[in-house]
Picture 1 (cartoon, rainbow, N blue to C red):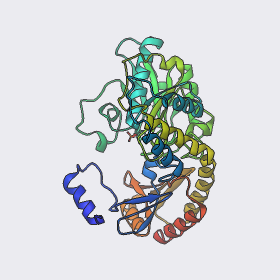
Picture 2: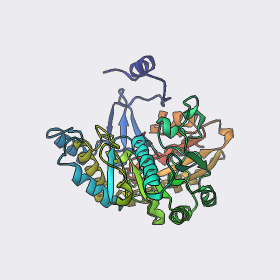
Picture 3: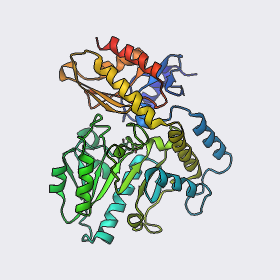
Picture 4: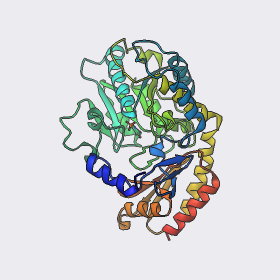
Length: 399
Ligand SMILES: *Cc1c(COP(=O)(O)O)cnc(C)c1O
C-alpha cells in the first residue's frame, strides 16, 4: 500500500492543482470516521461537502448499489430502464414537486434549471427571444461550469474564464427589497441557495425566503432553490426551505442524493414548467442511469427511515451550543442550522487554515472556506458521544 506521503507526491506530480487539500490521505471510511494509510483515525467534519449525509458506506446504500450493479448499470435514455420511473416518483414525493429531470453532478442540475427557466420565460411568460434575465445572489456558489461562474463574484473561481454568459445579474443575499427592485419584465427566475454554503454557512433572516416566495409569485418569476448542499436533512429539515414552509417553483438537488457513493443530481419542478422541455432539447448519457436510480432511492429511504432530519436538528443544536461555549476571543461568529455549522474567525486570527491543520493533527477533518471560516458538517449519523469528543478537542485547540 502507498504511504500518505507517496499518495500526495503522486497527486502533486500528475494532478492539476485545482485543489489545495488538507494534507491528509484517506484510504478507508465507515460512518462518520475515516482512516489514513498509516491507520490514523479522523472524524469527518466535512462529509464531502455534505454529499455523505448518510455516513460513509451506509450498508443499505452500498447494498442497493451492489445489487443493481449485478443486474443493470447503464442503458442511456435511448431506451427505458426499469428503475427510473420509480426513483423519479420518490424524488417528487420527497420534494413535493411534480416532475424531475435526472442529471449527475450538481453543476449539471443547475445548468438544467437555468435552461428550463429560460425556455419557460420565452414560451410561457412571453419574454422576447434572447432577452431572459436570471437574478442570482452575491457570494453564491452554484458550481463550476463556464455559465455558472459567469454569475459568481469570486475572483478565484472566475478570473480569466471570460467572455462570460450574458443574462445574469447579482443582488445582495438576504435582501428581499433588492430582489423586487431588480426584477424587470424580462426576469424569468431568481436562483438562490436558501442558506449559502460555500460562502460560509450564511443564514438569511427569518422571513427572507417567505418574502422571496411572495415577490416571485407577484412578478411571475420562478423561484429556484439550489438545495444541493442544504438539502437532504443537512440543516435539520429535509430541505432548508422547509424551515419557513416555503415551496419554490424548482428545487436543484445533488450531493447527498448520491449517498456518498455515486454522483446523482436532479432538477425537480412543476409539470407546467417542465413541459417546455421536449425530446432532444436536453439530456445526459448517464443521467437517470439504473445505478444512480437505485442509489438515489436508497439514499432518500435512509434519510427518512433513520429520521436524519430530526437527528441533524438535535445534534446540530447541541454541537452549536458547545462551540459557542468555548471562550475564544478570536471567534467572530459561531452560527449554524442543524449540523451545518460555521465558525468565523476574526481577521487577527490570521486565517482558518492553521486551525484546520491543527484539527487534523488532533483527529478532526474540516475545511476552511473563504480564508476565515471553518465549516463543521459531519455525517448526520454521528452520535452525541462523538460530538462530545470533538468538543473536547476544539476546546483544547481554541484555548
Ligand atoms: C456543491 C454545490 C454545487 C455543485 O455541485 P457539483 O456536484 O460539485 O457540480 C452547486 N450548488 C451548491 C449550493 C453546491 O454546494
